Image (cartoon, rainbow, N blue to C red; front, side):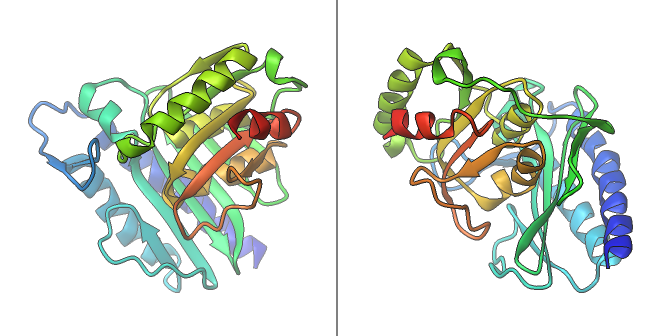
Length: 261
């Protein structure tokens, strides 16, 4: 099975890189649609990227289920093979030309997160991982930092902007974390934030609410890089429902959990 799956994943990596060209297009004439919530948007680019990727994924792994952000009625089940796709993570960044967005794709096999593919076309950085085989950026191995305390850590976070009812709790927590860590960063793209923890550029990340497509691909990359991801209660993420998330280098995980509580 592994040889077959490896070939499938290699095809998926090429597909993600190829389709990412749409993220580099000028947004001037692109249509932006407001979805439910305060800051929840979809663009023509999100829809085009998803349409192409879905079609090709069904070709390379016909028996798979695909859970994707812009699909209205997802089949939220983890069968034999389940892809979890965010065609553009960081859509608001894309709309503003902020150049910090990515395509994020995860593959779950028999209920176990198996592969992650996250591509940032602006920096030409392809993060990849397969279960038990390590994590890489552009083919070079990556690993988490060895920072042992929150005081020595640079932390990135998300504001769950689609639900501003979470703002008070998010910023209360963030003040507490900020007072205990080296500094905070806020980028607007959870998948890349988690990958940057995996690559040792950040020590930790947290957000009050993420969807499975925000974390599915990046979480495999993080764990293969030696990191850890849980919800705010310290439990594993299900890959099927929205949840809170903390991603760290392992060493500071409990301390960051405490700071959040």
